[in-house]
Image (cartoon, rainbow, N blue to C red; front, side):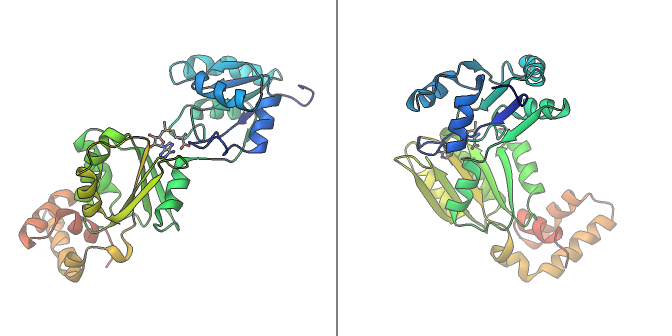
Length: 282
Ligand code: SAM
């Protein structure tokens, strides 16, 4: 088993449907000396289903920093360890990246097996443009931090993707609609599961629809289409005027943020539309 040296197998696991585990992942789990699991109960179910008897070890965010040096030593000593998170790909909004980079830094072999992740599944299921995408993990909970982040992303020519918990979905969609009122979006829920649902449409409509729902259950991904053709029509028609006014304010000593705010007020345009125009070359 250890003849050709230690190795860390990074093993994606299903995000819902237990059938979505690859033959290579099962083989790695079977052949490993140990399985490092974020949630041993969840992983035990998977192993039981496939009659895999490899011992499980706890590896969650609480022990990751403490256990990483010891695990790297074991890899260097010839151990074969399989890393799994609760669901999807380890390291993607889940523990794993610290161990992976420590193992690479120490010269241990790391083999990443491709497999399920909610980010790519949601992107493709949303029907939104896929030429470029930005994955933001979970949106910041604090409103100020969240709007700063969204303002910074306003001109990115990419579909934006965020993970979200069901009870914060309506509030986050409202924030996304406020920041990007002229864009299309999508809410993907319970992907690969019985109650899978993808709701698409202009963000303000999406936010209104979700606000009306009693309660939302399950796991959720929120997506925002790129500026592209859905760029704000009102401000776009006046793009040259907007840009000129913002630049004049900046030349007069205002910060870019203050200039955008002042011009939006003066021209009676939404601030985020002015922001998008001001950050795009004319
Ligand atoms: N490592 C995982 C991956 O590769 O997708 C992500 C783990 S993160 C802790 C959990 C979040 O992923 C959920 O809150 C939800 O936003 C998203 N997610 C996971 N499974 C999902 C599913 N079946 N449908 C929709 N979103 C899902």
